[in-house]
Image 1: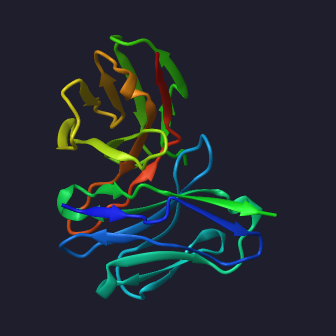
Image 2: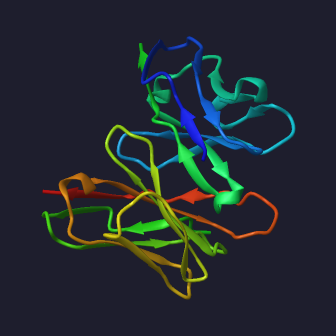
Length: 114
Length: 115
């Protein structure tokens, strides 16, 4: 069975500073990895995804993530945070063998200081 | 091209009641999955419907049931509501394909409050 761990429940960053959110996954086969963002009271918006190929993937809103198979990690980064990036971020792993269902981490809430 | 739509947006019920939530998939999609997101937690997979049958199920009791219609839209039913059923219910649709990973697209969710 697959699982996802996001070690940081809350992160506070200053506007303009860099951001890195950690994600570790457990899955026996080739993982399909995703990062979603959720603003308060809203649904999930896909930031980026990794299926195969280049391990550094670019997403929307200036985010990128790096897949490291040896570390079972898929960390999300942004070089310079904007106040509008304050939200909850979820990492997820998809399992093709399990009907493509997604298993999500517990989320990391990002607060942005002015 | 409409994305995934869900109704209603918000719902308030009392314990013991029954509720039905609805989802229309993205145009061209034939598979619908349902997720429950409790406050402060990540979404959890409830079940998935394809060809009008439940194909996968997560760790949820039988009080949670669903249906898929010939037009691929879907309903989630919850009987005998408990306070702990209060959550955001998310619907996701995808296109069933062989040998590839079929990305899921999420709707805005239905916020259910059980009093």
